[in-house]
Amino acid sequence: MIYRDLTNRVKDRVQNSNRIVILYGARQVGKTTLARQIIDDLGLKTLQINADLSKHHDILSSRDLKKIQDLTEGYDMLFIDEAQRIKDLGVNLKIIHDELPDLKLLVTGSSSFDIAYQISDSLAGRKWVYTMYPLSMHELRASMNPYEIGESLDDYMNYGLYPEVYTTKTKSDKIEMLEEIVSSYLYKDVLELSRIRNSIKIHQLLELLAYRIGSQISINKLSQELEMSRDAVIHYLDLLEKSFVIFKLQGYSKNLSKEVRKKDKYYFYDLGIRNMLIEDFRPMEKRQDIGAIWENFVIAERIKYLRYQGDRSKFHFWRVYTGGEIDLIEVLGKQINALEIKYSKKTTKPPKTWTDTYPQANYSTINRDNFLDFVLNPSTDSGPEYTKHTL
Image (cartoon, rainbow, N blue to C red; front, side, top):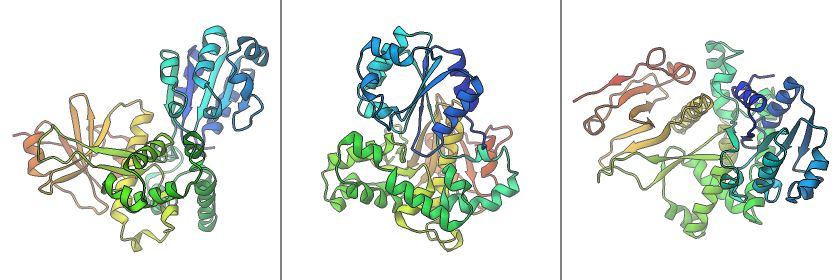
């Protein structure tokens, strides 16, 4: 059993709060395993419902308090797994929360519920929301030393960190597992919630994004290549983000005319999924895209770590039309961290345009030598050294 960083936070909320606890994340990242571990630890009599099965859908979408009371009578907690499948979910969760205040609620979903159910308004002030990702370096560090992580780093970048893939021993079995995830799970919620009948266009879109990680994406160009409307491409990208397959970075700008801000960059939460989409699992030393893979890996790990710590930083990239660029910009209030990501041991200096425009910002180069400190203990005291640039 790999200890997940969210375990204690979610358990504490379930045990000590009367709010609904909602755990988001892509399918197969371990949400159900974590929820059942918490149920076992708390020892509460729990009604467990798998919403992928339709057995209880009518009751949980009925808005009928009597039916819900009959279903949950005698239980301390209700656990609904993959709850995005239930119609009018938000309204019914609100009824349960308001009318059955002694019943604890733990809910998981593999897509943001508001894709179809608009729960944000109906559950305002009634929920705690957490997002679970594939395994992180911080979680693996609990049972591995830095040398062992370094030795396996290429495998993590090649096959990703879905728990079942990680625990599978052979490379051929890992690829087979990833193929199953892509073919059976990756598009499932997007197809159902958007009522798209064919996954070909989604697959083609993801394949194009997989080849272009780390590059700015033109929606118009994607529209032309896919022979889809611009609005359809934007809609598909939004669904894939809300289903935790991809995430985007927007350009950071103070509205200076020389700063690029109209095109976004897209990355994958899991590189195994990305490599499966393009069917490329060659060793890293043979990969021409190693720089982009490393950039995706480091940014995804940074996001996992900070989000699990409850950090609300916003993430961007920065580029000017004259060519200056920085891979990752973290912004929290007035604090700005600029991070250049290099696969080699090379260190870099910030572009002059950056230091002239943002003299208060911190700057650091993240490479294979210091990335683990950056991911595991990223304070300015014990993590990689930031340089403060002033005019």
